[in-house]
Image 1 (cartoon, rainbow, N blue to C red):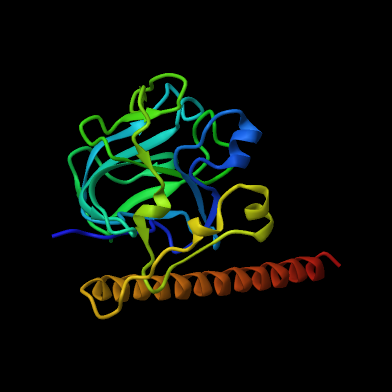
Image 2: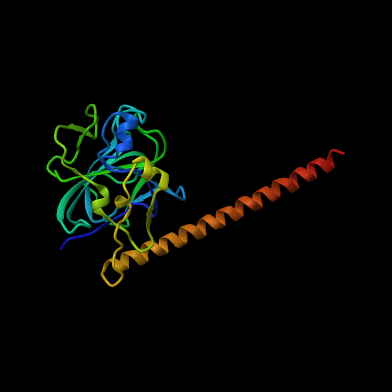
Length: 246
């Protein structure tokens, strides 16, 4: 039975699309994946589907080298949103934290880690994610300068646009500023992901993700309340100190 992969983050913004014209113009080389961020700055990454971790760790000698903290996962029988079904290798670069290990089975709810700003080619916190149809050599990436400890230099482009792979859970969104589309950082079509149908089994996952999102937002509100209370207490304490010094 085939599976559909969802975005690893919810309120998602696409910063640079697959084989972006503007990306090549800006950096002088091709972009064989997609660059994503969470609009709310919540950087935790989830498992997208049912797969297995085949490689992960620091790609260079330090976090500032090569592709940074990277994870490679193989997903079987993936139904693309154009109707094809393929086995896919997924490579993720620039992570701040990795929360899985080699050999681990992942599900859509598995926490993979957090995206970040590691690696020599990263210019700010984001997740670079790419999909490859060559699952025999899942660590081999086309377009990189040299091999690292996790990601190896590939010689053949067997990648596929991540926006052909992903589906949206009902609680998710994918956006980009209109001016970025006009400049060629991505195409309008790359933002038009289909939503999982609510009367299919995927609805159970969607409900789980929606509830998780509500809990996260509630926790963020509570944290903000605590911060406000701390500020008030500090102000009161400073006032008491000032009064005692008179």
